[in-house]
Length: 112
Length: 120
Image 1 (tube, each protein chain N blue to C red):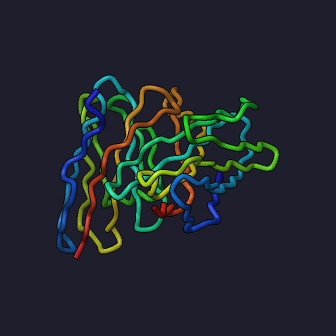
Image 2 (cartoon, rainbow over the protein chains, first blue to last red):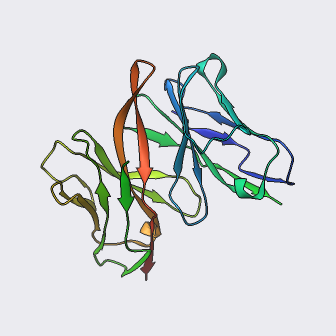
């Protein structure tokens, strides 16, 4: 059990650029989640994958956001045409059961 | 919609003393879980303790215990014998299973967090 891994840890980009983050879940976990955390707030749910299928998306996930989980293993979260309001910590979590989520260390995005 | 409220933005405690962090939640569900997560400066979200709503007995994990009052929708965390390593942001969180695509999954709703400072 190597834990949930996220890459990169930090990303600085200019407004209007596209960015992509990667999450590698714990290997036997078929459930994968993305959350977003802004400064001083708790994380907010973005989306959920069961294996390779994206089964739930929050209204927070605008059409500039897209997430994939090909082959049901790692997942990517892409943000197109970044805006300053996208600056946040993006957390990935995985689980094998409904209630026990394991979180990664997150990717901190700063949009200048 | 479920909501989680942490009314204490900041708390402080002396090393070796006891501190209690408050949390209230609102739900119409009967089947749910409650959690306390710790987020140190490394930003890793670490599970501290978990409570199943159907269990009347309060959960305990070493120095951490909860006071779960289901009727009052209250879920406080007590940290005994506080240590310097306990300093962190603490989040109360609620989870109820949702159905999607024929299976269930857990969507966490977090409170705003409480910053805990431990003084030596």
